[in-house]
Length: 265
Image 1 (tube, one colour):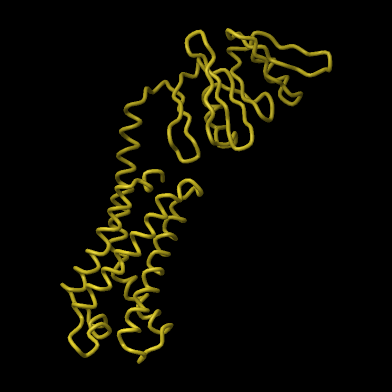
Image 2 (cartoon, one colour; image 1 turned 180 degrees about the horizontal axis):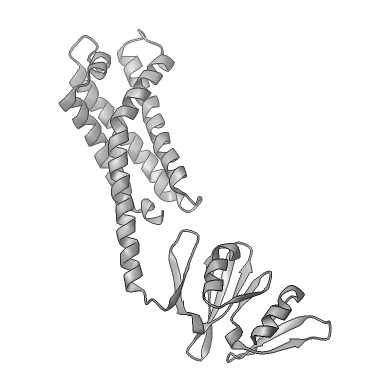
């Protein structure tokens, strides 16, 4: 979904939708739309151009908001589809107002809104589908290219928006710690320990951890058994795993997981 927020794709919506709307109506001149917009005075072409300008303005406003929305909301395809429908509803509110004013009070706003919505939906659904199909194909192409560029033996950590934050070998991983809405990945970078904080949840990464040889040792920790130097109990009866890394690092081991971890060391 992250690439749906690209500025290029927002500009594409702003430019292509009004042009497609205007071209379709002027070229094919649907009977119902002509009946609505001609107004008995040969104003069809003029009104189509004006509505296209209104669509341009509403798309520019809505897509600007969508571009900045990524900082607040994690979107999936369903929410994105709802946003596109909201754009059509928003455009229809202005289009119905324009047509009602042009008829100088002959029609009420809300019945006109219903007529305009059905017509706008019938015209705009196709360019929306084609543009977003192009974006989806671009996402697939980008994902394939990214995968090719990454070594196969790397463990890839992505944030909640599927943006790659870290690629590291499974052998270099030490532990993963969860805190609030973030996880900290600790790994060996040469002789030093490096840490990367990623906005994600432990639950999301659990499958990735198990696949690459890390085991849960605590509700907030996954650990790599290959780097455990010793298991010990402190004076209060709590268990810890001491790592063989270059600095003194100890990871808590809860009673629930102690036997499993001890069998791996």
